[in-house]
Image (tube, rainbow, N blue to C red; front, side):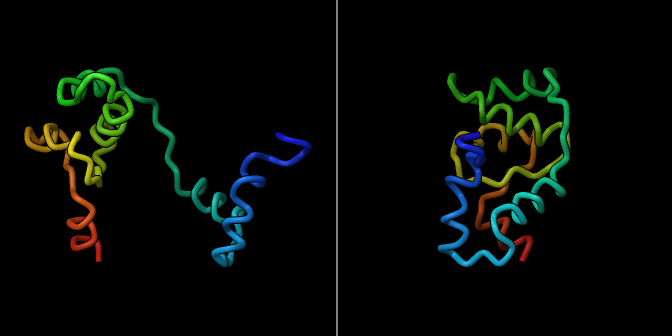
Length: 103
């Protein structure tokens, strides 16, 4: 909090107004929070995914491990996910493939 306003309000409010978001930033993040499923990250899943990423790619390992744990498809054009895609541990789609598949 900064002077009674959240960081969210200070940094995002002007952008939502500038782009005409009809539900505003609080409505948008309320919608996101209502759709989020919180999981407890599995160390075993992280260890299974880690060998397919370069050193310093902890965030990518966590994203892949989350998809492994939940059965979710990882959608990214990041080449860091090519190795894990090739061994079929998780399903990885490019953004183009996701658009074609979903729309």
